[in-house]
Image (cartoon, rainbow, N blue to C red; front, side, top):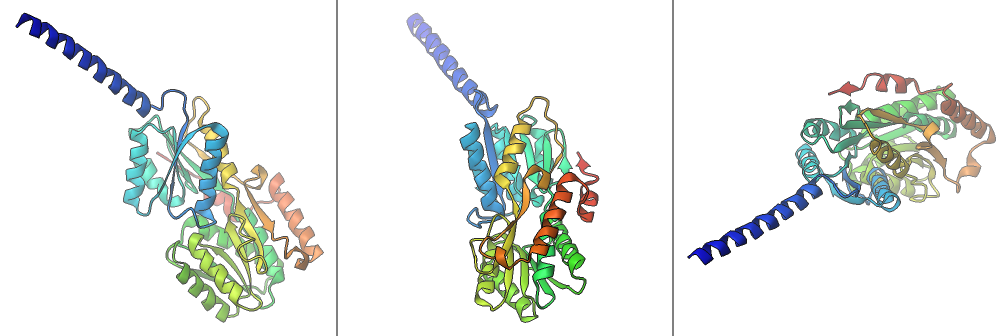
Length: 342
């Protein structure tokens, strides 16, 4: 009996040591120990959209390849999923979690206090806290430029804008587009419509056909995957042009696309990741624009020759003024003047 008691004691000690080691490994993993940067991305739509979500995923892959990070991506659709996945990445000890879109910021603000070692970043967000940051893209700047080009290039004086849903960043960019168009052509009329989602390609095409039937000859779209339907409608119409958004979409319909209002999301996500790695990081709103090389209007080279030289010069002068701070979209300062603090 004595030998059995000694054997049991030794066995229990071994088990305790083993369990303690396993527990320590889990704790180390949860805390992101070992020096391995861990970065996650939540997108509201498919990364195959060749736009908003695809660009962010490219950014995640660049972080992986450039910084040697462990990365993870999940497509989410509902606020409940936003919060659940934010929480799971916090539990797993990820260093940085990107919620890609304005709609993620409420969930980030709720979850972040429970996981102070994880930094939550929402693109197009204005909510901030100790470990909550927002990234605002000065999308209004190249949208204004696109409006200038559309205002001068339209033959019907009717321009269309089609968005996925009425998110504030989309509405601001549409307003800037309208301002740019009317600056160069006061006779322009604009028609704005929203699909109601970001994924329905057929609905996007239907909205475009409806605008074209009303005389619109240039459409500025910001509809992610649904935008592919808008491109399809433009390709099937006669004398209609389109302007892409978020990513360089000039090659989707190269004979019909004047250019794209681009956010260099890979560059943006890398910039924010490097900032978040600095000691003493505290959440704030980062504003990235033309001067950072993050947003820009990219003319489609296949149609560049139809843009008059005078208009090109005017565009270059306006872009330079935006870069050096002597010109800013009137909408931009108001929209970012008072970010919310948690």
